Image (cartoon, rainbow, N blue to C red; front, side, top):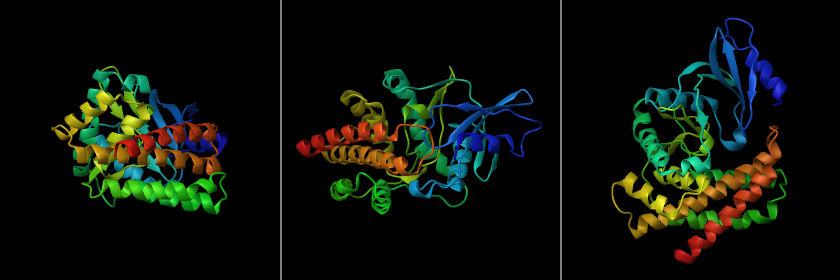
Length: 294
């Protein structure tokens, strides 16, 4: 969707009391985002339809957003209609990976993640999706092959690695995952942190969020150990370490393939090829380390 089309949709939402002038927010790589002032009040507006190639279903995002607000981790949903979500605007700073790596902030983030995993299901209404990273990888591979991606020659290898990682992870417990713990999805308003953007929310292994938090923000080995010990209230044994390491690889492979598919489909002005290259480099490094250690 072009930005002018998205802006027109944001302007025409039925919730506004008068004419509005949406201001684009840069940085989004999935949706078109805007700030809208209406009646002296600021709102955050996300414009985007279902994205079947990524498994993004807006009914699920809406339900997760409402449950996350009820759990106290995300801003309130003010209005929703097909292809649009209006949220209370949070005045604050979007975190960077450097900020996430600050120990004091990382402690606050882990508390948010624990609330997400354990409390959101108590507020969730209706049907909910499961986010299984290996199904995402398999589906991405089919999409890339069908649409003649530049990465087609590499797909058999990626699928073989994914199968090995899925076997290494084995049986899982289920929590309600955010499943996209990029630094940009945390907002610090000066008093507390907020977790936003529930496009990929769904029931999942807790290791996916913990692994994604580490890989997306390049946490140190010491910080990763602290996260695992704090989350599980025990020092991780070798089995947990192995499964966690496998999930970190899977998280990076999925992010890489997400970007490959976005190269083909997205109309957002973003350098997806560079993003693919960056994440593939990190994935290959993580995979080499996994093979050497396990």
